Length: 423
Image (cartoon, rainbow, N blue to C red; front, top):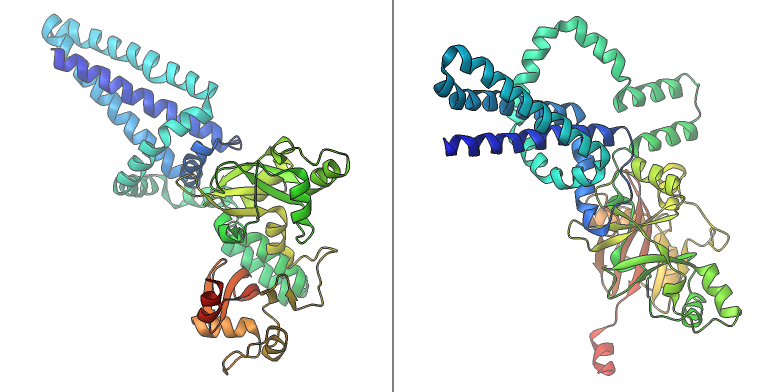
């Protein structure tokens, strides 16, 4: 009997888990997940992935919960019926199972989950993700059966409720363009807005090697001096290494401090809390989060909590409206020297201009622009942050669109003789 009692306790814990998870996930699906701690960023990405298929998640939870409830009733009956007999034992077993399930399998876990939805979801997400993947074949069978039972009429009604898919929106935009309802640029903006649902923070971010960040021990005067050669309004601040970005400091705060006699103050005193997001976060969700938090910059974190890069509000807006030039930007300069041996190059720059400005001729090929050279060399559209070596030059892709490269960072690498002289 002791084994049976242990089984009942185990099944109650499972029922607690399924009911609480259902309540927490349903609650989070109706509101945005709160600002995560660094240790919770990976869990947040997993939660968002599960909520992206809310019907499948709920089906998984219901399957698990119903299985546990039936098993609990059966095990309770095997304990009580031998003691009291069939006539009395069956209704008593039912009452005991019902009471246990209501108290410990429904009311308590759901009350707890609704009081602490973020914490409950973070604790439950990894077992849930395992069950979600494991029960996929069972879900498919269940969905097939329910579709047959509901019939095509009910299915059509559900189709009306769910609204238009991305593909249907794309079709409407193209029809509007053909009929003259939209102009070409208006249609492109609408298509790019739809594309935000498919892009992730990792695809939009400035990759870690290109991130300009400062140690929290840097003084305001030192930071201001470093900013004389760089045009950054916001600078990530780290403690031990760039993997531990704890805040964001505004350049205007540093300049104000340096000019008001506080130049020796550490910049950590001016830092504001950094917004951390997982690399898998969708661009549309990220845009809404930045607006809600009134933030302009977010730190992109990988699954281990390390810094992958940074993404700004401007990065997302540029995916919609194209390259945004600030007052400091030289829009007419397709090739801009930003260091002794570093250039920012628009992909539309012609190869002859590139040779003139950079001092290196790209190989002959079926292309006229630097972007054409990159695509031809790789045989595909590169991703942001991708690197390419050509002779003494290293190309780093800064920005791309769906079908083209927009801008690059080009560095002249030191030759072996230069390195030998340096040594």
